[in-house]
Image 1 (cartoon, rainbow, N blue to C red):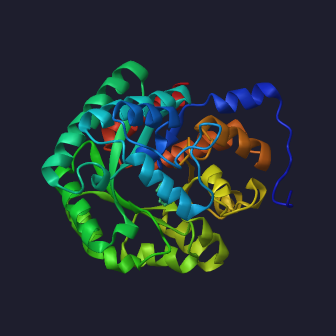
Image 2: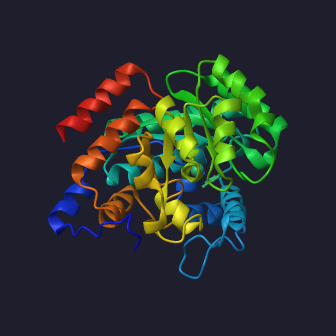
Amino acid sequence: MTDETQEIRHDEESLAAIANLPKVELHLHHEGAAPPEFIRRLGEEKSIRLDGVFDADGGYAFSGFERFLRTYEAATAVLKSPEDFHRLTLALLEQSAENGVVYTESFLSPDFCGGGDISAWQDYLAAIREAAEIAERDMGVTLRGVVTCVRHFGPDQARRAARCAAETAGDFITGFGMGGDENQGALKDFAWSFDMAREAGLQLTVHAGEWRGPAEVASAVDDLRVARIGHGVRAAEDPALVEQLAEAGICLEVCPGSNVALGVYKRLADHPIARLRRAGVPVTVSTDDPPFFHTTMRDEYVNLARCFGWHAEDFTTLNRTALAHAFCDETTRAAIAKRLDTQ
Ligand code: ADE
Ligand code: ZN
């Protein structure tokens, strides 16, 4: 335990109240939210071999970021049709609802939904959207989509994803972003795609400062002009940059459980989330790829409460911050605000 952490002991009742809060999640990969049983069943139905994807306990097998990305892509290979994504969308939103999530954004990759072809992408998107409408009606969780390109697929493939995003921008597809291997390439090589998405009216986020240091976060702000940053936690190593993020109100989509599971930080106690928050950076909490990292939104909240001594009011503020930075229209924001206030 560092002197950061306060080891405040919550009683069971206050932890349960924190776990049960209504939640807003901004950083969730659609395929990365697939339960391993879901992927295994789909593989069996389609007779697709999934060698090396699962560990002995039936969870996803990987250690370290590069192997994580390989396992992720191997698992995703069973998702081959709009119908598969319809089923996946219902499965992941069911998990969100079980965790008290009332609003979530997920990263949708045209690369995994028709290989970047616009007309195939439209078919996949229609299926995802139909499932989201069912989930909203039956489970009370609202979904918006952030079209995402994959950094290690390169700038040309990113342009195809950006065209898919621009073509389908609207009340459901509200953002554009990029995930993948941050250690490859330079963010400025993707500026064309981000400019195109911005011109189509989409709001922007990019994974940066998960693996590379503060300079990558600065590049995200300067070269891609994003409103939010996926992770961004390594900005904490540069006090001037932290101040700049706070002043500009750039929101960090922080995924503490993911960072610990992938080894960005050894222990939650070493994580800079509390420091960033104290410095006035708009900080939010998400799960990234929950079944891969053996986490849920409830677990994230309980672990943060235990480690940093945060109370229910801290999480309520966190959720209001997330909603303020959500990529949704004002009618949706107002409706979700009511749900945060009344529960
Ligand atoms: N894709 C899915 N999860 C990711 C992560 N944590 N970082 C980068 N790309 C990802
Ligand atoms: Zn991510």
